[in-house]
Image (cartoon, rainbow, N blue to C red):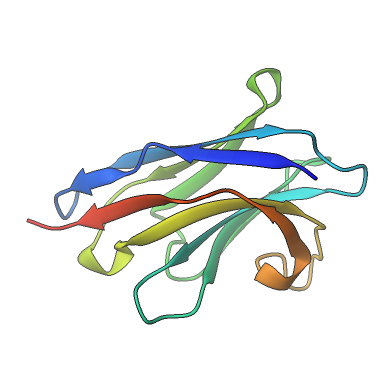
Amino acid sequence: EAQLEESGGGLVQPGGSLQLSCAVSGLNADDSAIGWFRQAPGQAREGISAIALNSENTYYADSVKGRFTISRDNAKSTVYLQMNYLRPGDTAVYYCAAGELIPATPMLPLWYRSWGQGTQVTVSS
């Protein structure tokens, strides 16, 4: 099973930026995507972005489109999530995960089998 570790979370003011990192190792042969997810207290886990491992395809939820950017550095085995124009509603624990890319529903948590421990992002003044 793949191992993933998130870093880069913290406290930021509304309108600010953060960059999350996901260090990835031990991918399975059929892992074809890395996704970013978040979960706020009392809410379901939400897929917010995904990136294909074998193409340049990226995917975003409407809630973050235009504000967040996903990217990967293959040499560093790291996937990044650049988050700009952060809002209080972005407050959550953020997770990265490895799994199978299903283009019709690329950010459905069901397709991802290996998860990191999460990193807290708090947007507050």
